[in-house]
Image (tube, rainbow, N blue to C red; front, side, top):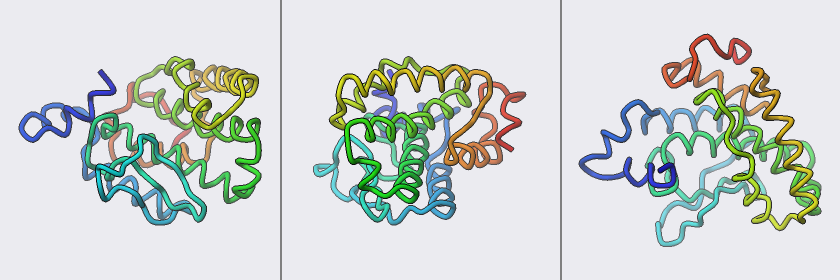
Length: 203
């Protein structure tokens, strides 16, 4: 269902019904602008022609974001909430590149696995804020395979993510991008949080 949610949200007549109870297009756009002001991200690139869109969001050298969607416009595979998660994930990568350099972050299979596992923690942190659970970790392994990581490095990243998921379920938030994202979400769309008593640490 999640893979089709963006498609349903994009439909001309019934899309508004599928957007009920979710973050709204204009809120997604404001969220992205906020994150771009707070972090070293450049212009959003790569969404001009649907025929040229890739299926993955990425951060290129210079922190230019190449996206398979137009921010705030739902499409198949990219519902509005997933666009929020993608932004936070990309910001964490931009911070890695800012601190370590692109060459270090992507130098080897092990480095790519560590980099992606850290950014995937953002996905887990936002998922827990929204749903009160962490997603199945096995479903995240394909991202590491797509980045050319070796099996042993994927296994190591899986162990790191399992430890992260356990701490997240106890209310921990570690990634800098997640802290800023959750502060914005708490201030602007608190009704989306699974439990209003949760997340005093994001304030």
